[in-house]
Length: 460
Image 1 (tube, one colour):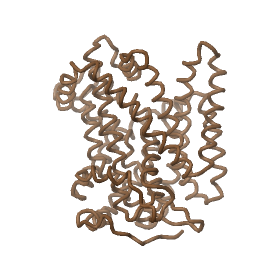
Image 2 (cartoon, helix red, strand yellow):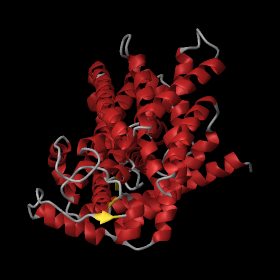
Image 3 (cartoon, rainbow, N blue to C red):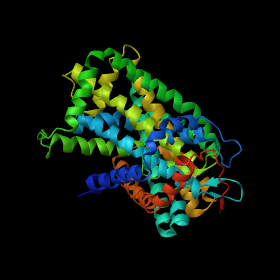
Image 4 (cartoon, rainbow, N blue to C red):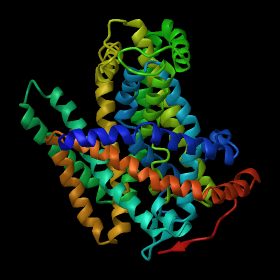
């Protein structure tokens, strides 16, 4: 067995039922223990667009959320949902959606711990994330170091090289009539690297500024495209929803050589895709949540939780219904190919459908590079100190170019493994510090003290 096959096998196992049970179990446990914070989702949305200007932090709550969404909303929302449908059937859409509903509680808990255990550096910056919660909340430095190592490695793969490669592949197709593939990949790689370098050299404020302007526009265009398709396929929307619900709980035997019932197959791929898409429990989003200007941990926790709401409960759900209506409306489509499913669905929009899809993939991938650059940078700083930042940024820009011009199957597999491994220490902190999360939630949220100022600040 070669290295590619080995990593593929490890990735397939680690993202199988054990990780699904661990992540989904944490979602459900926190939902119950925190008394269903999902009930406050509209309060959370309202807070996300307000500013706590006088509170400590590097960027606004909305800017922190936009940066998190930039890293989260990506090709997984477009191609990933279609892949879940192709592997698990239409029922996978409902399981993906349910994962998002329960995942709101986990993203909430991550945001709360990020603020509670963040530290203020001597130069006034705010640093936080699972590594600080593990070190200061649980006093397990070695596990904090492991998280930072896994996050650093994952950032270079899933957050950089594979995203740059997705941009390069799409641009190569667009330029195929005017330029040889090799030259277009090199040109695209140089352009992406320069653009990324210009943004990340400005630090979190520069990244957050771009993401705050970028994310709402790209998400709105994508959602409008989906709504148009649903309008074209309006006669099939009711049938699509009924099919999704029926197959999500069907106990009939699965077909196509897959063992188990339709329910089991749909649940496996729907839950796995939902978990991978919204990153609830992975530990990445709280790294930027720690930089937010907020008067207490629960306010930012609520804002953070909206990330999962928008990513999975809204965007992935709409995508899933679009894909299912397209399957019903065009039964000749090869729905075993997730990428083809998405392309065929958007091709139903005259003239602009394919460009909207292409624009979505390009912008989602680029924004992911920006968001993950901050995650990796903070993880490297935790491991090696502030001096490592400039070297990290140089390496990040260079890898953006490399990712644009090379095949990345092995990188994908390694990144998938690192994502799972970084989730484990983060879930440990969430579960073992759940009493702290519950106590803070009771005081600030359920006892009506949401506007209270928390003046506790840790110093590095």
